Picture 1 (tube, rainbow, N blue to C red):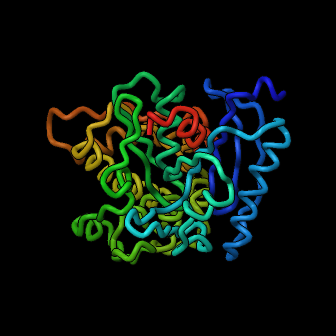
Picture 2: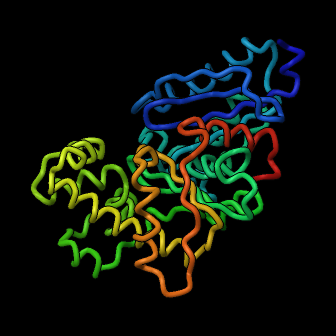
Length: 312
């Protein structure tokens, strides 16, 4: 095993409920993987969990990986190094990159978890071979990453792809009778509050329903519930507008959906028309496709950062 893992690198995807490590060679062939629950509300416990996970991989492979890519949720202040994360509150305000570097003692390559999803899909995934791509996550929140010629575009603040914190226009909120909602980022009216999976459920409840999540809304709609169908129609219009803005800003050659809503097959049939309704004549809607790697994309993208850091 040690000989086959001589060029091994690790990708670690840190999420709100789980932390996953994959060990890969330079061809991104996975030789070992493990998932653990994410420690909640305990920063010291979080650091120990990541350190132990890497040590377990070292032991299983017979040697330490030469580099580790880590997909962190949220954003990092590049001046102070402090992390801001709604999904893993324990790391907010902490210098996560510095503290993990001290514990893991090998080259670390950090990326946003959503951007790592996009990078993974751009290399061997659903967007492989396209000149540019946008990976759009529609889960508990909404965000994504942008790749050009296979290279992840991070931007000045590392925020490229944070389309979930663009604003929904007032005329759309008025059209659908929706309230102006506060967002966890500190802004108001952010796209993510309306187009994410939790946004679908919020819309249904605003119409007088009681759905707990997007799956409930979809099940009700498929059973013929008129209110749930209306909620999905409103959601599709808001999502169509946000993707139209994305196309006008970045003009990707393909959009890959991720997150729970990426499993809702009708979206791929219905979204092109919903997007086109918010674009001027002559603008073509790019292909919108499901992901190839699903929820494993974050760890794989993080491994890609470590194995082939020129892509970051």
